[in-house]
Structures are given as C-alpha cells and as structure tokens.
Amino acid sequence: MRLRKETNRRSNLRVVFQIIAFALALTSFTGCGGDSTSSDKVDSSNANGVYVSFGRAMGYMQNTWVDVHGAGAQRSDPKAGDPNDYPTGKGPQGDAIRIYNYLRLVRDAGSAVDFAVVDSGQAECYSNINAEITCPAAGEAFYGQDAQHTGNASSLIDNGNGTVTDNITGLMWQQSPDTDGDGDIDADDKLTYDEAVAGASTLNLGSHSDWRLPTIKELYSLIDFSGTDPSGYAGSDTSGLIPFIDAAYFDFAYGDTSAGERIIDAQYASSNLYVSNTANDSGRTMFGVNFADGRIKGYGLTRLGSATTFFVIYVRVNTSYGQNDFADNGDGTITDSATGLMWAQDDSVNGLNWEEALAWVVQMNAANYLDFSDWRLPNAKELQTIVDYTRSPETTGSAAIDPLFNVTGITNEAGQTDFPAYWSSTTHVNWITT
Image (tube, rainbow, N blue to C red):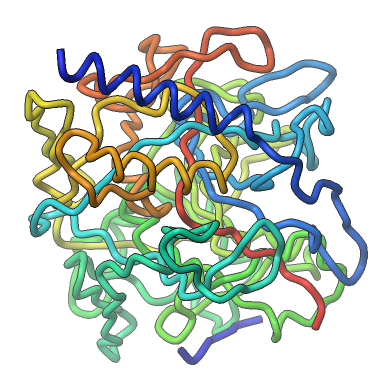
C-alpha cells in the first residue's frame, strides 16, 4: 500500500568533566519503567531517546549476549529507569537496553562543504514520557533537546520524472522503491543485497544512468524524526501512521502483511557492509535504514537459509557526501570542515540518562568548556555523521569513530572490552492510539 504524507588546562578540565558527570550519575532518578505493549499502544509509559552505538550493538540471543546490529547502529531506549529491569534485553533479538549512555558535545563552527546535515525534522519537545511538552526554557529540566536547535531545514524538489533532488545535500534520488514498476510497493519489489548492487548499473531514470546504491550516510540523510514508530501495532490500516521519510516526495509503503511481513518491515538497503559480523548472519551483514520504525541496524544477508530482501532507491551526484574532513585543533576540539561542525575530542567519561545528559551540557557551557559556551547534545543525524563504518571493536580494536577522538572504554553485557553508545538530543516517538 502506497502512502504519501502532506507535509595543564585540558587535564584540569577533564577532572571537572568527570566530577560533573559522576555527580549527575549519583543523582540518577528512576523514571517510568515498564514495557506496555498491547493491541492499542506501544511503550506509552515512556519515551525513548535516540542513540548511536560506537561499539557493539548487543542483544541476548540463544542464551548469550552477542552483537546483533553492529557498531554504527542507531537505536533507541528508555530515557530513564533501571537497565537491570531487562536482564535478557527486549524485543525479538533481545536488544540490550542502554539507559545510561555517554555524550559527545558538538557546536556549529561554520558552513558545510560537501556533507551538509539535513535537520532531523523534530519540532516538538518531550520529557521521559511519550507525550509532547512545552519546550522548556533555559534552567528548566529537559532544556536543550533536538527541537530547540534548528539546523538545515529539509528542502526537496520533485523533478516530475521519478526523481527527487535534495537542495541541502546536493543528492538526487530515485523517488520510488517500486522496482517491478507495477504501481504498487510490496514484497515483490524488494531485492537482495547483491541484486541491489547490480541494479544500479542498469537503471536509466530521468535521463540519467549514473545511479549508485547509497551509502548508509547518504541514505540516513533522508530520515525524518517527525515519524512515529509503529512497533507493536496490531492493526492493518496504516493510513494513520507516519513514516520516517517525507512521503510528500518519496513513495513509501509499510511491510507487506499479505506476504507475511510485519508492518515495520520497510528496511532500505545501503552499500555498507559491516566490517565485522553480527548474530544475524554467519557471513555478511549490511547496514540499512528502516523508514517504518526509524532506525539503522545491521541486517544479515541470509535468514533461515534464504537471502534477505530490502527496498531499494538509488542515488546520484555529490559522491563526496558522507566523507568527513577532520582536523585536530590541538585544544581539545575537532573540526569537521565537511559538515561545519566542531566536536569535543573527549567524551563524558561516564554514562548518564537522557535528562542528566541534557543537564550536563548546560553545566559544561556554564563552565565555558574548552573556551566555548554554546555546546549542545547533537541530534541523531549529526551524531551519525562521525561514525566510521570501516572500524569496529572486532576488526580494529576500536570504536567506530576516527582515532582522533578519545573514547572511554566499557565492559559490555557479555563481559567484553567494548565502547559506548552516545546519546543524541532526539526523541524516538512511539505510536499510541488517540
């Protein structure tokens, strides 16, 4: 079914950094726990915060903890509560619940060159519960979240020939994943990874023949966090659901339930294979974006002995998109000239829940951290720009990030040396009945 939507200084500062983070951790509160899943609501007692895993994205499968989605996955978990309430994770793959994540500060530092980040599209503010709140003022709890920092507003053009141009990224996109051209988007349109790679060279669309399968960073540039996650929705009518892609410009369909798929089975293929392996597959794992539920995950290319299939849209021009241009400024900051963003070289050293994370940013600004007072928690799309998908704990012994960055080591749920996930300022809104 097709859906379209209308509309000694650094050392001292590091000590201060640690003290503030530790103090906030000690004042941690227990938020709304519980996992309320029924036919008419999903997690309505708490709102999830979006984070990116720079280490293994763990899950509990077959009585053991394993990397289920890969370093570089974007997931979401409750903003507050006790992770011990989920001893074997949550969901069909037992995803580890990460409530106390780390932080990486960001600030604007100039104009982007080839890697402009499109704003997340999140216009509302949230607390720990799955309901909108009035955006807080400075000094109030939850100040500094995604909706309070506007970036490059989405600017798309329907070219009227089956293509869409993104004025911010400079990328041109195939408009529809209707691969078989029958006017309906369903399971028959999905391709295996190898078919998706091969299909780019045969596509002639809009008088262009230089199409390519998008990288994960190109594909994620399209994600729109005005969407709502339908996970757990037991109905069949998708007309009231909002996808995580702008359906006013792109043809979109949820999973083909008539073919035995779930509503959330709208995973799109990228060209990025995980440099390690996940429990999803004994061989290759591909990073993809699910525009139905708003996540990046690593998907095994085989499942139960059969090739996994995905929706596919191709992209062209601006082949530099997604390539960082980092410079170590020698003062505890790193500038990415490609995106126009400046990052703190150190992370928060300790894990915090989402409210504490926002409060910690306020305190860092009050302390004029690294001589700047305009730091913020990055939104999900900004945070994903600094993932290095050529790196992983298994293959490079590092976090999936450029080695210019300092990353605090952790011990994961399996007892392995690993690296943390970082909070974003973005809320992952769950579907609830109205």
